[in-house]
Image (cartoon, rainbow, N blue to C red; front, top):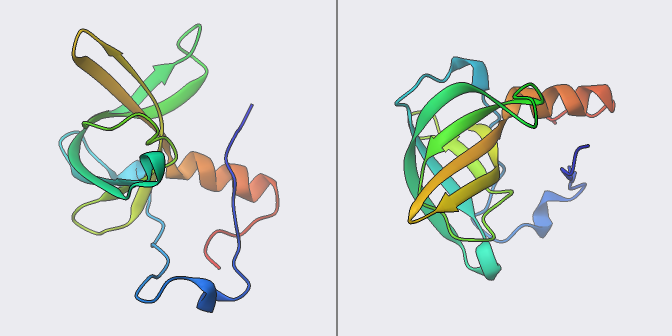
Length: 130
């Protein structure tokens, strides 16, 4: 049911120079209209896109009861799934780009809430703060 990977670097020195981890935020604290930044790597190209939170509690799925996600007003490229969604005001990660639908030039973009990912990690005994 979940297709997220969590990697822990034992040696942070393997990161490229000038790179550091991102702070994990509280996705329950976001409100509609909050400005966001999506950082992703579609086709291996580093991409930054700016947008806004459109809906903080959207139910999606077959019966609209499968997952509570963030809806974003954001232009993304195909292959951007998995990109970090950061709150522009704090630079904290509040979600992960998970899916989108596009028809006739209009698109709807969703992100899995960071609090849902924290709960998943906790259930697996993984502490994301370390």
